[in-house]
Image (tube, rainbow, N blue to C red):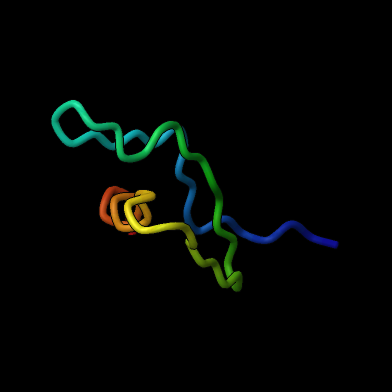
Length: 55
C-alpha cells in the first residue's frame, strides 16, 4: 500500500496567551483524503490549534 500524501504537518505547536499556556507541544499530520476532528473539553485549546495552524 502506497503512503498517503501529507497535506498538513504541525510539529511542536505551542500557543500562549500572556502567562497561560493554551496548547503545549502538539504535533500531528493530516494526509490527503483523511477526515480529522479535534475533540476536547471547553478551554482545551481546540480553537487555538486551528487558529495557529497553517491552512
